[in-house]
Length: 109
Image (cartoon, rainbow, N blue to C red; front, side, top):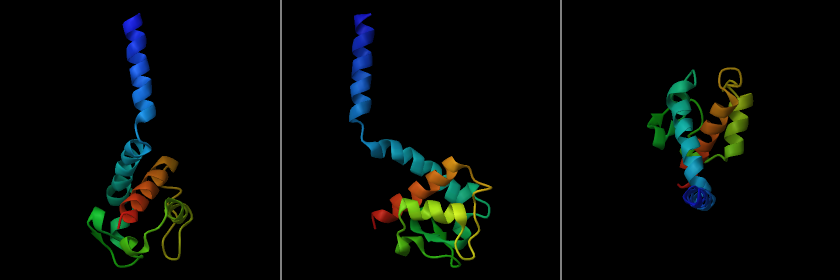
């Protein structure tokens, strides 16, 4: 019993000390799949984003625009200009994931 409690305490402390970025990276990885494969039409058709190997020329170059997570989430949810809303074809989790992905890979540039 004591051994189990010690393991629980160590696990709890480890989780508490794990940086939030370790958890957000998982969400960003899911977002890359949304950006490159799951969204229909694919985001890569319209947008340039180096991390995704995308060279679209219809929408803005996301590497240059460097949108925040909130800006991406709003654009994907409501649409912008010729970009349609994806709120009926992507889940809320997919929208959060793609927003995290785009904002995280463009913020470091």
